Length: 281
Image (tube, rainbow, N blue to C red; front, side, top):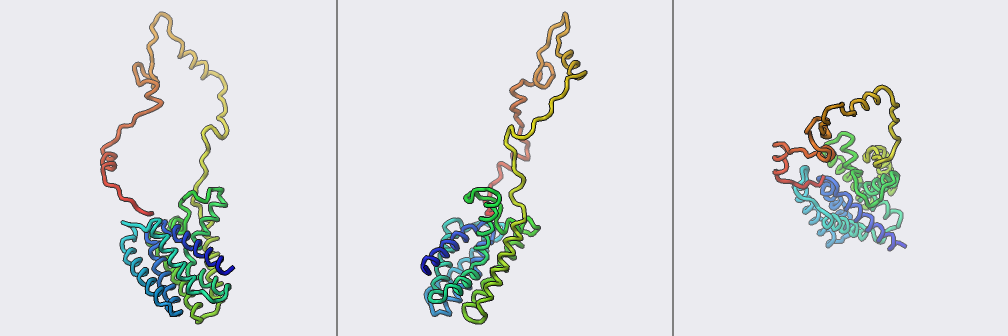
């Protein structure tokens, strides 16, 4: 049973780090803090190999963060985020091997509180909104913080600070400096944050399908209808001039009105001709 829980924890944290790469700098900042924390836990357990590997990972993520800061020039992507999450989760589970399942689960959650909270928030939000779980959307932590008024850099600082506090509690609990009840405070704070951010609207109003909804009430036939009928009648003794769709003799055709062709302005030509830069925001 402990082995199955460990495998589930590794899978959950790996997928959570994959979803954490949804905004500039978030995955890099949280990854650096988590790598240092898990490396400290491995060093306490005299696991020299994993401790050195995690320090190298932390240094690599710190250098990556310099280029991933908003506006980002590079991103982790699926390969980088999955590798980072798998390495951190596997090292954390190895460091907590041999401890009780209750205390081990608390420490593991504290070390990875921000990625797990982001995954739980996204799953709950899409489930309550009736959206497919595999369908992406602007419903992650950084997206909701941006809707509350924070800047892109401010959202990264808030999430990095939250990760630092949670990882610090996890390291202190692992070393025995504080009791196991400290992890409950982390769980309570994460739950409060998820429930609070769940109230932030991110999907917008649902669009009505074409043809759905109530029909516009029909206009009663009156003087206006009689007048329009009189206008449509051709004058006696005169030739009827064909009118275009615009109502002007010799105007645009009916097809041109239904499918208008808008000429691109000079500003649009400049925008299209400019080089495109992909941002992970």
